[in-house]
Length: 379
Image (cartoon, rainbow, N blue to C red; front, side, top):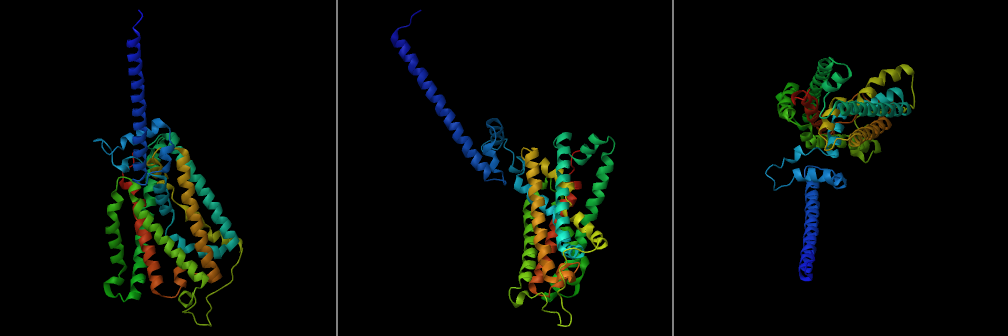
């Protein structure tokens, strides 16, 4: 039936207005999504890649994070950022072992030592990538138990036990290091009596950091990991300043008599036996594999590319730090460098702060070893 022209005109106007309303609604939703995306980026160390995700994935993530929603999860449940993963993995890698690296470089020579350091950094990166890829195949969230069961059925408990023993040993060593470092750090400030008892500092460190070992997510340790890495930075900068000999306060040989020079030769290479004796230091310089599955589990959208970004950044950061500290200390003392590099420098308030920094570093690394066991990683 032919409709009157007035009816057609009215329907056309209604259709046009409806289309305009739909366009305005779409524009409002896009603006709200962009605003939510911006708010999300400012919270919980989220990644800038959020706005680059496909529309459906971005809407799902941001929709879960709407502040007005009664079901909105806290930011820690959205997923960890790449930055958080890098901080925690770097803190797992870097420890008091860095103080022994200059001596290892002296044992095998600067050139050979740096080549070995690069080699084991590359091998560590490859191993971390393979473990992460295996966890992807086992299904996320994953665990070493799940990966082991997929690879060799029945081996999960054995792998879990091996990791638990390893983490217990490292965590115990960290507390021992605190007990050794703190008396040396406070004695120059006039500390006496019980303050020089290593047992006090060992027990105190254990009590202070124990609550951190019972957090539900490794991402929650990103702030303490940042503090630990700042401690590493302080020690590294101090070693570099002594190497540059910036004024009388940074003379590495200030407390040595002229008859006992503190500087030796800087070899580029040494004997095979000396190189082999230094090898364990390089092998264990990049140990962090026990935490890679936990860290990548918690990543928002834990894709292989994002996991590899975390791995590459953490290993690369550690390699640069080791290279700078080891080279600076070896150029300062040559083959006379101590097995604990800090023992070679004259006593001063700065050196005490450096020892305090080492104690802070290992104390804040303790939860990263214990959390794998206490968090109840799904098997």
